[in-house]
Image: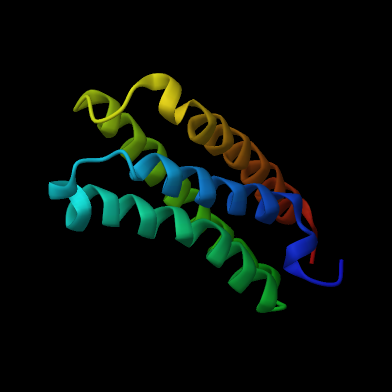
Length: 120
């Protein structure tokens, strides 16, 4: 691979960013500097950490950044659940974001497992 943009997990996480931004437009204005800001920061962290780790050219650094991305993905899933719990949105309004979250999570898990399996 020539660069991180060729990674399907990075591409899917960028689509997740888009879907979360669309979904957070539905949140109440009083959440702009709280939940909206937090979920947007977390979702941006996912592709950003994939890219940064890839650019480090060190397997251990890459794994560290992928694990950070996985943690941010968990944070986004939790925050989407909070949006539902507080009745800020309907399930169908965030279904695509939730599905992408699960897909990105599986891809991150597989990439991490494959890198951990490499004997150095």
